[in-house]
Image 1: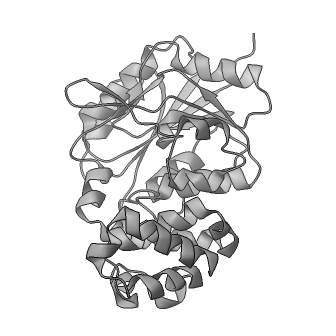
Image 2: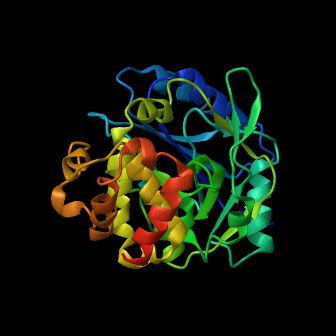
Length: 310
């Protein structure tokens, strides 16, 4: 029986013990027609040595990047080296949960041939081994094609490790982003007409720990402001007819204490990159004391008035 090749792409940076955990989870799979592409940004040979230990058990392609590409350029480099019919981009600190994970994805494609990518329940595992289901707004799981912009409100697909894609999706990650990188990626895929299918099953473990990019960004929240403003420019004016998107950006400015154009520029956004709709929100917000604006009971009516006269 024909079995399509799956490329599991692992962009890595040190933490060889995590890479090993991912490799062992692949070895345990009942589905064996797999290649592993490791694109390594590490300054040492720790990941190279670990991958070398498993070359007799896995079809591994190893690449050492000098100089380091950094995320998400390293993600794109790994994807570009894949040769499978299906592709998974697996972060080096994530791993497959069950022995039937890969076959579950393949079976989903067989049963739903119109699907271009398949994703599973977004389940994080903390350092104590406790599970955390990270998806919110379950309704959105089945409305992605209609409301791709709502990924801003809840990234229900989860990180790249959670999804398997047909190789024909020739879309790459925007290398400017580190926070909204996956939201932007899936938003663009969906807007190109690619279709998704959701498996309500825990197939991939998303590692949660202090050394993640998520932790770094939350400690440097100007990155969140900057990337959201960039993304607003990508969305375009029409997207702000959706009051939920409008409200999202209204709260973004308020919660980041943005009181002037300079506050946005300081985050790393060029003045000409700030959409008019953001300037329109700011014009009203800066007239309202932050203490008052932070009250949802008061803020919502102001947002709605601003929305009506956008």
